[in-house]
Length: 191
Image (cartoon, rainbow, N blue to C red; front, side):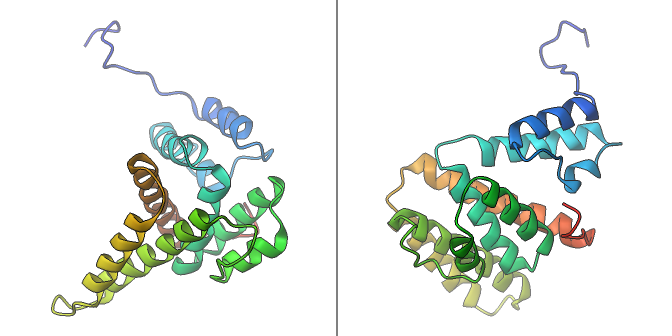
């Protein structure tokens, strides 16, 4: 393939990606989950690209997406993601009491809009659906009932089709990141 071929793209160096992460996250650091990929610039660029596209861009507010991260982290027992996003949300000015409520599954706070409450409930239901599917025997229809109720809850939100897709992509991304963080046993005290 020729260097002029538009399908050939160069991968940024790890340092270039780290600089972009630090600049765009606004937290003054590069989270450890990205730092671990320093020797794998293609994977680093991929994971950062996913995070950037899903969490930092799009129609839904970043704060809501990071709260969804808290919901997924709680459901998957991922202390690393919980710690990173509690820190990030605090830096963004979100009230500590609201964050604690969301972390324990209480989505009734007055600071949350109706749609935010619904989105957080959908995230909790979606992660419960995946867990039920993974732990059930094929004959157990419990996960199918959860899947149906999750889909109905998603449909009932006052979001357009693109926002619903973005919500689902956010849930899936945080499930992926929590899986990686849990399997690598990332220390929540080392963001």
